[in-house]
Image (cartoon, rainbow, N blue to C red):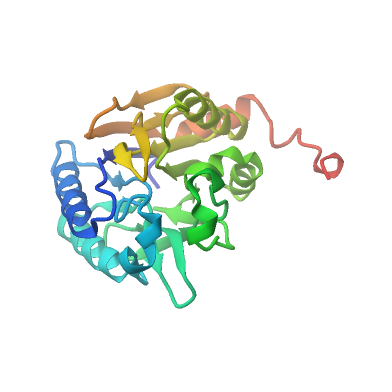
Length: 265
């Protein structure tokens, strides 16, 4: 099992309420990222990239059972031999719409799925979406990983649960808006520091649902250092990480061994 991982973050300007335009943007972004030199091992997309926050029309816009998304990304994974964390999409199922993440390996196999469990009331998610009921742990090339979505990072117990289950890397697709850039950076760094893991976050830019999104997709190492960060524009960020650093940091500061969970209840 290699500990080196090359990651590409595809920071998109989402067109609210236009899945066709957004699928075209997504495919173009993945193609550009996948054909870079050096080629990434994993490409990451942002939150709700298929629809944006067109929540008043979300039932008619959402991807039925994620079928369109899964077909497109599976084909691209197989074409280029890259894994994809597909950010998240509005997914229509028999009972409603969820904000759902899919993760695919380099052969196009689905290796993870997660639906956002904390719905953001300030953007009326709770009025239009169903909350997920499972956490997002998965295996990426033999490495334990976890995923959350946007608002979830305000709930440190969720990240800690994933870390206690062995996750060495935490993925966070988002549509995180102005004016809360300080919150975005601070919360992501806190999740990395307290859990001694990499945090890989992919945000959006532009306008959607009456909000303005600032980008600043970033990768943070287990010391809490930002090792890559996007600007406030549509772009692709490439970065390499060494997952061996997770074990080194956890060995030097034994946070997990020093926990006293019986006192936290």
